Amino acid sequence: MASLAEVRVEEAEPMENESQARPEELRLLEALLFASSEPLDTATLAKRMPEGVDVKAALEQLQADYALRGVNLVRVANKWTFRTAGDLAWLMTRESTETRRLSRAAIEVLAIIAYHQPVTRAEIEEIRGVVTSKGTLDVLLETGWIKPRGRRKTPGRPLTFGTTEEFLSQFTLEQLGDLPGLEELKGTGLLDSRLPTGFSVPTPSDDPALREDEDPLEPGDLDLALAPAVEPETSQEPPASGDEGAGEGSSEGGTNE
Image 1: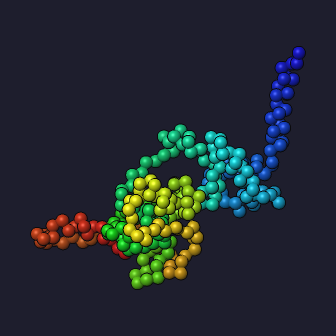
Image 2 (image 1 turned 120 degrees about the vertical axis):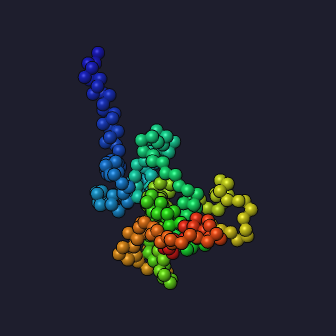
C-alpha cells in the first residue's frame, strides 16, 4: 500500500504539469494585471514582457480563459483589467457601490455630452431646449465622468466638454462607439418610436485630439470649471409685483461656460 506521502506526491504531479504547460506569457500578464490598482494598456504591458511575445494575442487568450470564471478580463477605454463577472456583481454591491442620485437634468446633460462631444454649454442648452444650471455641470464634473476639453474658437471662447475614462469604466464601455444607437434606444423605450423624419443619434469619436474649432485649455481653466457659482448681488429695493417668481427662472442662467 502506498504511503500517505507517496499519494500526496502523485496528486501534486498533475498540478505541476498543468502549471508547466501554461504559457509563461499568460502567467506574467496575470501577475501584472492582478498587481495593478488601475487598468493597463497594451503598450505598458508589452514593456514588461519578454521580447517577441505577441501581447495582443496573449491578452485575447487570457480573456478567453477567464470568460467563464468569477473574475473576467475586460477592456475599458482601451486598457485591460480584471473585474468581477457581471452576473456576480451583486456580491460586491454593499462593499463597493456608492449611490449617486443624479437629477433628470444631469442625466440629460450627461447623455448630450456623451453623444455630441465636444460640446459647449450653449450647445447643450440648444439641444435640450432649456437653460442649464451651472450646478448641473458642477455635479457631473465632480463625478469625474466629464471634463473640459478645450475652448471653442467662437466669440467668448466657451469651454467644450467631453467624457472621461471614468465614464467608460462606470458604464462598462470599451469605447464611446459602444454607446447604444438609435434602434437600441428605441428598443429599450428610451426614445419614442415615432420620431421626426431625419432624426439620428450621433456616433461619438474616441479621438482625444482637439478639433479644428477648439483651442487648448489655458492655465486655470480646470479650476474655473469647478469654481463655485458667483451669487448675484441682491437689490435693497423690493421687486415689482410683476417680477415675483422671476428669480427661480433666472437662477438657471449662469455663464456661457
